[in-house]
Length: 172
Image (cartoon, rainbow, N blue to C red):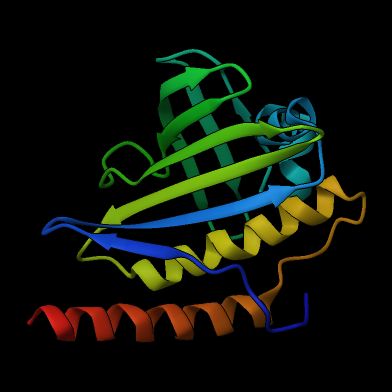
């Protein structure tokens, strides 16, 4: 990807939430992608240090110590190698569900990520952050980890904000 290229999102809106959906086909086997999403040693390569207890009610804890944020949320759905869901929030914060779905495509994997935030929050920023982290996930799976792609994040945030603003204007 170029320095400012980013993964596109499809947005849906309700009165209370905005959901960004990302679809990505990866050249990796399902088991490898699942490991990247769930194993502590691999999470830090593309997201942040963390642990995820792979059972409904288990704890998803991801520590963004650089920004002072710690995600501390129960796992709300889990089906090995297929589905993982938890909230991208800490206790006392609004619910921000994320849902990972994996589908095998022969030797490749189709990954779908849904990120939902309250409509009062900056959905463009949230989606741009996940777009950037998905680029980092792809790079980690290819064996060439990269730092957070700030220019791509900025380009995605501006594009997503414009798209969400235009969609809101059409509804009004």
